[in-house]
Image (cartoon, rainbow, N blue to C red; front, side, top):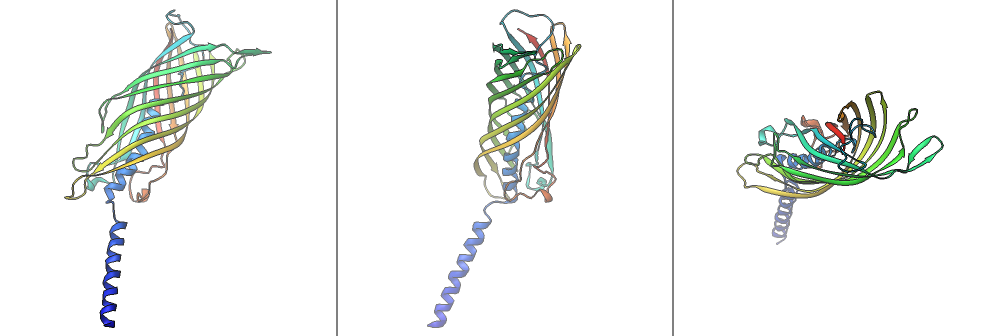
Length: 304
């Protein structure tokens, strides 16, 4: 009787051990890679939609004023950012990296609501601008479908540019990019996600003759409610969902050239990277989520 009891307890313990081991191995390697791709993709797409400065170039534009909307400037802008993620095409390519470029074509406007006050030689203190933008995110590379982006916010002038002083401004905006899909998921994995971005920017700019120079620092709080679908061996598709948010810092600079109709502006910037998700080891893969993201813009800005 005692031997039977001991045997029964051993069977129960073995069964519990099997269940515990099964509970620990609930996701294959491609599942962890898909989760890492989801956590890394939405901030990179978010910075492509936002760019660096919310108003390209320095505070003023040169050239003619079209007279359509008083105290308003408009910018036709092309944003781009490097999209660098784990290769999700198959289970055999998980150690590789897929690099492409995500682009956003957008129209931005800045409307002066309040000119601010003057104190001694300083002017434009407390000026207020309304910022609006809307754009399209074309599907390129492994990014499928066409998305949209809309945003709004305000810019507070801390100091207006004069002959001897630069222009300094602080801005805040909220942007939303519609759901996008990365990868196809037929043999490997795919992810889908929208992006909501709460961003702030501090900029300092100065014109020297026909050239305008601007530099700034940015902070973005990206969030998403995304999903990933993956296949492993002969098993059917598995899906996981996640509500994620992450904060990133960025640095950027603009160079503007005065034209008869406004300003042509080129921007370049860098955004900090993020952390690796649980179960994904950057040391055994070529993709490291801690690497930063390079982004840039090209825009034509005119006084409407």
